[in-house]
Image (cartoon, rainbow, N blue to C red; front, side, top):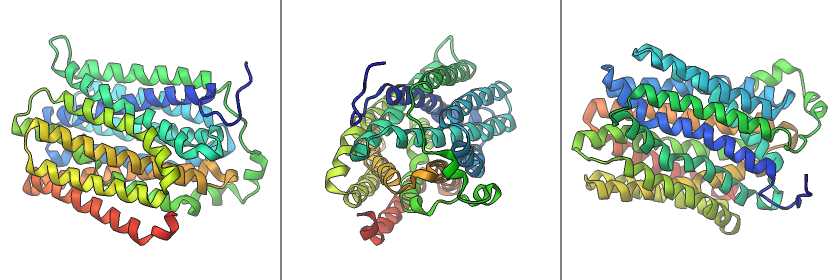
Length: 393
């Protein structure tokens, strides 16, 4: 293998890591608009949609201590591969047309999602040059976000195509994760060596490490990521039901526009966060989300929704990239698995709680209250960022 510059971001290991993450996130992107439509097709209400989405978060959060411990003691790449395989296997339950089976499938999928992200973030920390972690985080999260450009639109097209349906969407979702596992297996041969695991093992009894889930070093960036994604279900999952209610057609274009915005913005804004500071970047992310959610409440047509989606994803992009770079900087090299498992809890936890909150809002007073609740949540996140301004620096 040719010599790779130590300060280069795009090593072979990093490229294959990004490919594996893309395929894993592609499965999630396809299922994001599919589950709400599938559950309501089976007779479920918006609140039931929220419950099914929350099941994904519950298991993903519960297993994080085990996944983080596993990554530190075993092998980060194999943890990620196992997660991809488990995600693919869990979707097979969706072929049984029952809400309960879909709920179980999404709960099991959360376990695979935990391994995919904890392993992936740890590998990112190992492969990214320290001086370019903001930029590397931007590329990494940009690749993850790029899955939202075409795959949600592809899922909607397959659902309504004459030859398609929900079964075809689930089949494609399984194939994506299996292919991702293959890419991760290739990556495992080129990944840099981790820190000495004997040093990690010496930090205390295994059972105490296992049940001491939170790594204090990354609690602040985890809190920022949690606040950023708490309103996300409103503009990714429930937005499909909202568009159907107000009669918007060709809604797949929404996911293309918002996904492309996220993909293009993350690498660029990740680099910007290295220069202007994590504090300003996070504040800008929350402000953009608030503006987007206020806009979608007042313009109920395709163009208004497209602009709102682009603004929201722009804010989420800069906030997520900045939070990840902050976590990589703060993480103790001897506990990277545990630290990144702690950080990666923020997304499923926020998405699960956000799904319950948004589903309950729709049940009580409709979609206007849902978007208003989401804007209030983002405003609360901005307030937290302002209160912790000095620590974010």
